[in-house]
Amino acid sequence: MKDYLKIVFVGHVDHGKSTLIGRLLYDTKSLKNEKYQDLKEEAKKRGGEIEFAFVMDHLKEERDKKITIDTAQTYFSTKKRNYVIIDAPGHKEFMKNMITGASQAEAAILMVDVNEGVRDQTKRHAYILNLLGIRQVLVAMNKMDLVNYEKERFEEVKEELIDFLETINIRPKYVVPISAKNGDNVAKKSDKMTWYNGPTILEALDEFEKDAAPTEKPFRFPVQDVYDFDGERIVVGRIESGKLKEGEEAIILPGRKKTRIKRIKIFNGDKKEAVAGESIGLIIDEEVERGNVIFKGEPPRERKELKVKLFWLSPEEVREGEKVIFRCTTQEVNCKIEKIEKRIDPSSMKVLEENAKRLEEHEIGEVVLSLDKPVFVDDFNRIKEMGRFVLERNGGISAGGIITEVES
Image (cartoon, rainbow, N blue to C red; front, side):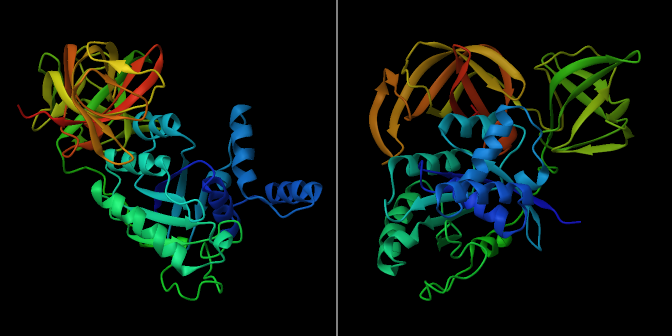
């Protein structure tokens, strides 16, 4: 059975994310025939060529109408593996998908229009990849057809981008010149760029490695909810790291109450052991509630003050002293922006101000958060799943970030 790799497509608006996704679905024969016929009909009406970007427009329309999306429209396959597509049309959508969503990308395609060059949003999206710890990055230098497939322009834009990526510790494995519209170097080698000796997009993706589930790390199980089912209380949630066996002893936070795992339940029965990434139910005797964390082995850190690095998303600035809601896994608590140690421009990585009083849209902040009650977290570099968070204000996500210091 082939494994699957989750990839996210990021980049400046109109640099070709949707076109590349549509082209990949088409070239790998993952696009249903009726969808292809729809595209042909639309092209015929306009008197032009097929626009592969319309594939994503169709999918978005279906999602808006709450129509089930067929797996052939959200996945594509090569001989080696299956791929799950995560499209990121904008900063807020990206953060929701990547930080709060169940799907977590293991690799990324960063799109750059070689005709237009590297833009601020290109750099912001690249910074978010760094912020989220995505290290497997493929750069697709798109729209080579608009620069007559010239090697010189490709090298010029590539050098500018690589210089920036170095400043945020991203080292792309491949930089591929493509025309998503025409299919050059997507699934097949292009005869228009004989100067390029590297892999196609599909060949490069197949070289990426699937992330190993963090099963060897300490066990972490944030409680999502508690259900009564056939007279049993079932504690449900997702194992963020580690593994668990029936009959083992674990500890509940807060309070450090010991409990024994009587049974591990899944949708269609019981199992003896569960590992990181699995959503399960637990039968235990102790009372728990949403936001509690069950652990074994080395405990997570209990903190009321956190030093974090965050990316401010809201068009409305945030000021020092302002109250927001902190959310990490299933834990939710009111908090205050205690101190803004640095404001950073993600497009240049220059420090705009130290000991600042505010953060504006798309700025990076090195911030101290003061929480109303303790949370249980880990350093992002140790257990990513317990070191990511979002901040909410007025009912919406305003920032996403990582916890950088919990040892003090």
